[in-house]
Image (cartoon, rainbow, N blue to C red; front, top):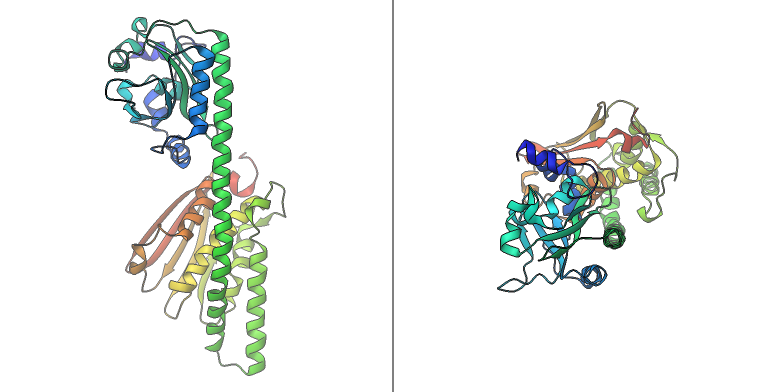
Length: 395
């Protein structure tokens, strides 16, 4: 893009087209793309809720064509479309060479064009010649965290002066779309958490069995065995009290704690067992009430899998949970050392447990998650924004 084109796209106001100087960078922003893909709308089939919205756009503006377009860094996908049927039938996507919507996304602003043939940037867009897009009015559609994921637009194949009423109508309908997207995401996550509760109930039997097995290997009298096992089961119960269903979580629920105390409490059922090599190490960082719930869910899931398959399943293995405090991000590592991890690598990241951990770390705590396995062990890495962990804005 030339400097002249940048000047045009960064003009003040909403007419005739605005966008940031870093147009391509805005489209490629990793956080924006993550929010876009997390909607699950890309490449999904047509749905009446979204189709109804574009029909309403046509009705209110009088435009022959209306689209709800999702834009990534290389194409636009039409989640809903009405009136766009060139030779060969309806189309569901185009490359960015045929996209006006990309500028709505990169600029996070309304784009209103009466005749694209006279627009210094858009006149060369191939949508003009190939799709007969001359007049265009588009407004941003945002994801759950404010990132722009696409555009709701009205299109005409002849010059069209869009009114302020047209723009207000599109913004109102876009707000409905944003609510629909947020509600669907919430319901999807709620269902995942319900599945997690059922999954946890099934897993509790294997965890208790592992605690019994670990206790049986110790040289104890019957009374000592009963007392030791009872203590571990009680510790496990205390751990489960930390991970209430997330549907009840609010920003001020519960009490704040420290990261070291929180993880130590979660790992108590396993650290009580003789022969378990577990290291918990890192600076004492405060953890907010809400973050503690999501972190507990992730740690619980990793611990359960470690009991079944990994560092907590037998001798000759070790678990290290460590973290370091950066300026803006807390870097955490979960490392299981010992044999048997390569066999898990094929399924790693595909099962329900990994999806739950990803939801907690990336979806709820807005962090980043990595996983690696080799012949020596398995390692998870988490980068969690400090303000999400502590519940306090960065200074």
